[in-house]
Amino acid sequence: MFKLFEREALSVEEFSKEQTSVDVRHLCVSLNAKKVLNDISIRIPKNKITALIGQSGCGKTTLLNSFNRMNEFISTHEISGEVWIDNRNIYDKRERVSRLRSQIGMVFQRPNPFPMSIYDNVSFGLRIQGEKRRRFLDDSVEKALRNAALWDEVRDRLFESALTLSGGQQQRLMIARALALEPKVLLLDEPTSALDPLTTLYIEELMVALKQQCTLIIVTHNMQQAARVSDYAAFIHKGELIEYSDSDSLFTMPNKQQTEDYITGRYG
Amino acid sequence: MRRQMQLNTHISAKYNQELENLKHSVLTMGGVLEQQLVNTLVALKENAPSLAERVALNDSRIDSMESQVEQECMRIIAKRNPTAGDLRLVMTVSKTATDLERIGDEIARVAKLVTKDRIPASDIVLSGMMDIGNRNVAMMRATFDAFARQDDKAAVIAHKLDTQIDKVYKKVIEQTAAEIQSSPQDIAIWMDVLWAIRSFERIGDRCKNICEYVIYLTYGRDLHSSSMKKTVKKLLK
Image 1 (tube, rainbow over the protein chains, first blue to last red):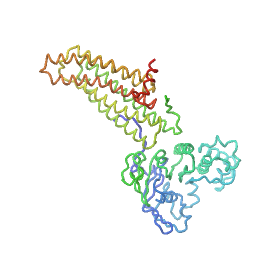
Image 2: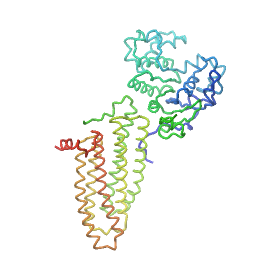
Image 3: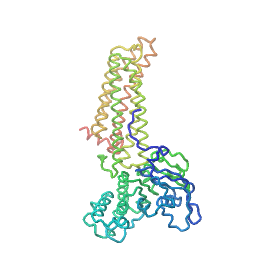
Image 4: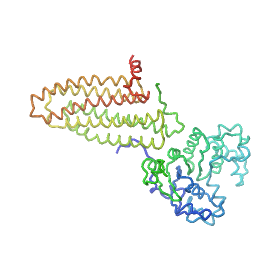
């Protein structure tokens, strides 16, 4: 058949082991004795953007936090199941959390720059890891800022306080801070909800460019954003994974009625 | 107000590309259709049923293209939430694809007539059909050119070409009616001839629709609306 349009997305059943970045197997999470995630199994592909969508409290942020063991900050948490990232079960007892978190970057809803210079913010993670070589740090900071599409705006004021940057710039700085460690996976928890529509589009375009370097997983309440930016999307409801497929299919012809109701705004 | 569409200025480069591809898909369909029509005219002129058969079979390719364009329009609406000029472009492409698919059907109908063993029509009718067909080719080219450049003036000029097609059509139909009376025993095949002539005339109408979509894309208004009459006059000056 003559093809007018190229499609790059594989169906979610087709991912090979090599194409999978995060492999979640029967994950159950309880927080404060309440089951938040129930038997989630999902394979997230490498170098793609996967969106987690669902109502507030459905468990999507808990799932995101499971990928870098952030849920462990809650003392009453209980976790069963496995999360494999690059052929390592991150919940294995031998796994070092600090090493894991250096490979899994995270950007939050509101930018949280440290009260220090732009340069120090970006190089912070590397310094924590013991990196002291000045030349290496300089190169890493420049590379990270370039990748976060911020270099041209801040190259002349790297040693000014990061707090002087605008909201959009601060959020890109947070992305640069995460990228400086060259993470395999970048987790984004509603990264644009505090930004204006135009800055949002710039961040989304940045995310698309970052696919070349790492796997991106985004939690968003903005359905249009999930549709625009993601290659794959998972709909979670009350701690259950209802549907997971390529975004083209999920947003035009979802398989489950629950998904259809949610994305068309009929969920009551 | 006249709007010039700038497809390459979105923040999202991928969205730019998607809209460009969408526009390009219409032109690809148009190119295939133009070739289909030219082949049909060659088959009609040289009485080449095998070529006509190939044209008729090739129609499924046009149907598949239309379906792909429709799906892509739906995908872009769902995923990109297009607004203003982008939305008009997506709607225009969707409607144009439908018209192009119908043009494909009309061409296939004429091609099927050429595959018949015998066409009772005289040379006058056949050359009349050739005349309409050649005018159709010219109108299709002008229409796709107006679409490609989103040129409102070119669209209005192409739109006018249908008037001549209608005049020739009327003459050919009158001649055909006279010939039917002289050989009523061939009424079944005459019906096919009449449908084929009608199909040729409909191609002009479909091109006219596409010209109207180009105007809609530029002005956001219907060509026949009272507010457009002055604009059309100005464009034709």
